Length: 90
Image (cartoon, rainbow, N blue to C red; front, top):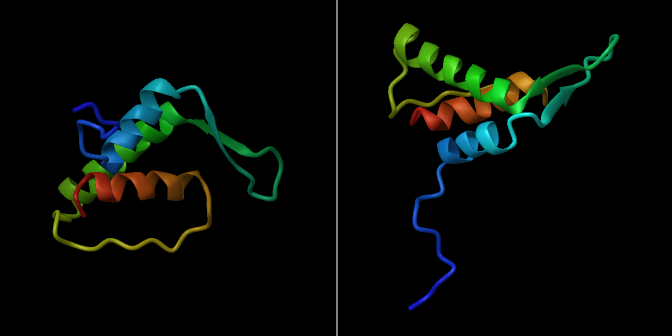
């Protein structure tokens, strides 16, 4: 039977990988209220999210069954945390 169901699980890590590779040059813009807005590409967001996930696991000892919370403005750093934390299983 033909279906429109996808053949892989829909994971945050897969969304991050897709955005980083297929839409890697698209920009995330953060306006700080001062001067020029900060811009990062989705490829940069993906690389920084991987860095954060590694630091949480290796440096801080966060495991897959622990909770991590953020109290951040809606900015590029929050997008990185939004992808990094569930991608590492926390």
